[in-house]
Length: 400
Image (cartoon, rainbow, N blue to C red; front, side, top):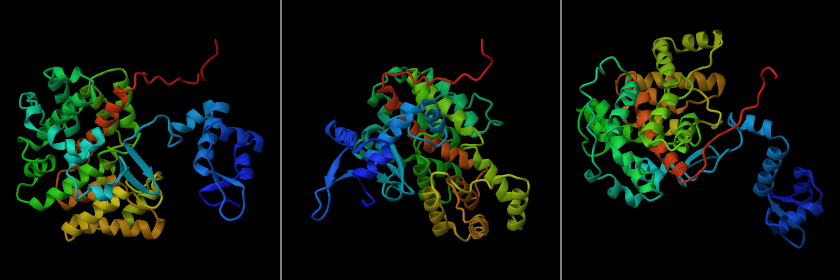
């Protein structure tokens, strides 16, 4: 029996459904790597990841429709990206664990990492020389619009005065991204950029609570990217058609606002309100109605969403005695004790919002501003690819 990282020739051949002779030919063609066995044995061992990669390729080759269908629902990877890795219950941006990024880097620095893979470029990109757009926010009737609707209203107006947005080089797109992030921030903070994006938001929302800035910064970083989710894929599709970053971000915002994506936080917020004074009753009513508990359990994190763990710990440390934090703890306890499931980032954002006594739309606002950094990273990658994303549909209608 081979080790956890290797397979014997017989095991590898069986996994691939081939003979050992064909297996050896794969090695000679560079499709598989082999390594010497430990001890006195001269038998070769084969890397598990190589064998599994070939197995996935075989699945696509021999059952392409099934492979494509599965890929659209948390399935096999459908494109290459160097931005975000989700592995072993952890989330990495360009190889950096988000747990290490929070508290050691600003949101601006993390955004720069996502765009350029170079922390040192932060000061060059986030400078006044790249300008802050002044779309006529005050001229709009924004009082009845949600923050996402304000973003989607203001972005086309700003794009109309930003000719540089048509330069799709990586450096220019990163500069455009800074203008977009500052525009979105000012739209909801209702004041000019004051230092960092997190501080500007805090000054606009909680001018007398400087202790809230690290929490807001952590939320932005935790939301910055999450691999190829529906909004990131939307941004990449639009960018592949060579639309501008403004247009790609606007499309991604539409996807984010849906209740099965970033809009989930609104369901979590409603659940928190219902749970006040009767957590067990709220959980029971939700389960009895056939609904899922909102903000609980993520298919990519069986042992708990690392973003939620991080944010909840920070809220507990700084604002643990608030009514919002106490209610969150009670809800978590009931759900973990009875179902063994854990909160998602949506749950954590609602906890943060209630602990700071911010408006109900704050979770989605933080999610949108934070995730814009990741979308830009995906847009930059997609511009570097000359291909138009154009999947095919399997026709199941009336035959001609």
